[in-house]
Image 1 (cartoon, rainbow, N blue to C red):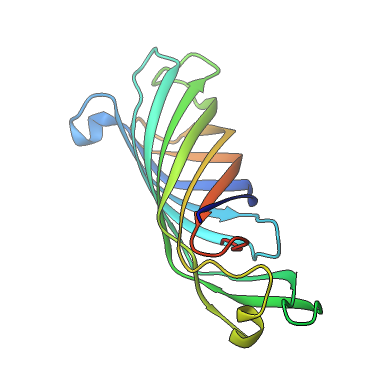
Image 2 (image 1 turned 180 degrees about the horizontal axis):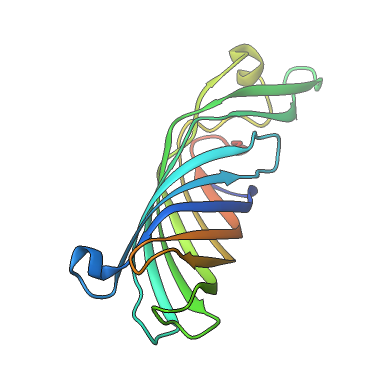
Length: 201
């Protein structure tokens, strides 16, 4: 049976530093934006802080408050651990392991708080969005015998989607290049097969 496991993944305050924020005129396409981001995800439930890389393609027009981006996010492998119990004797177990390289696609919609013009140095904004993981799950566990006998087992593949929101600002360096700083929170849900109590990463 498919089980929906809602985890408060520590995409709790993921911070984003965009190396480039390039406006449309640079690529001769009006209203387009392009960004390459380095990210750090602060996660709950025994997971390491996680590093990610994101390519963002967006729409942003002068004089308009609303904008949107499509994000292609690569999450690097990280270590995890969680507490559970043995099905054989009820003794506590600590399961540890490492995840796969993970890939997600996201859609975000934002609102510039101030008027959006070329001349403005700081552009604070609010954002909300959704994501879907195309590839995710655990790659390996350190003690396969303990994991096999555990009440909560590790999911090695699952469907995962999330919703979130945040705030940030764009700092304009030139008419075509800038830096974006962003923080936010994401609530992630997972459907794992085949165990009733799969632990998803």
